[in-house]
Length: 341
Image: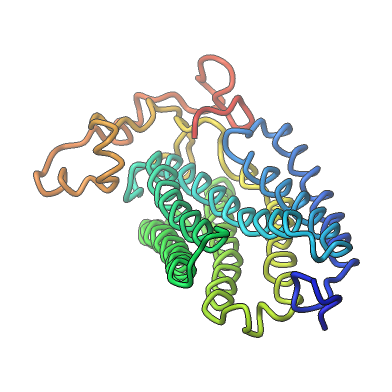
């Protein structure tokens, strides 16, 4: 039921639900700030508290909008904030998977540093399409044709976002399959080897679960856009609080409990030896190609076709010091100063 004739909502917006979600997101975000300080992982997981802050402000705006349902600027602010916050968690997954690939470089199908640049680049293109579509619809001088084109852009952007994220999950699955084939994620006979195996399994399962949660939210938005403003999802309030609220909080809470930096070293030069037990500090992954080529061809397909030899530093692991025994300098172990993602 619409709360008043001039309301921007097709229902009477809840005044309680935004407060509940505001409180739980505030608590989770505060804990994530603490975890970033504890693990010194701002360059890796700063997007977790950042996404939480977007939700906090978004639900504050939503609460104000519930009392002023005909106030357009507040309505737009709350809607936009709740739309842009979930993709921030996707960026967290990009960065964390890149760190996993740095940790097991010999099984990585892509330069680890290109995970974030490739998928974030795709997100930037999708964001530009979204902005173009939104601008066409929101323009006061928009013709019916402009509005129709704007809606088409929004639909395309949401579908592309979903495709991009499925490609990310496929990349993770491909890497996981390699881990299984080499036995890195299977149970080991010794406690130390089993510890490393469990760490890898835990971080991969964490990424899978987060990916499923975020994908469910993307599917919700796709269906909502295609149903249109008269559709069931847009005409009812509970789907927003389930998919943009409860699902995203579940993702935050999961990262509170199983924070990615519990399983990964801070320094991307630290990698796991092929024995699945020993951690060593190598020179790091070096791609001698021009930076633009690494963006255009992150899988180095051209190099594979031309059969160019790569500098596989992990094949000379005896030359690299074991972490905890021969480390030189501070901040190169787990919990040390974070290096660039």
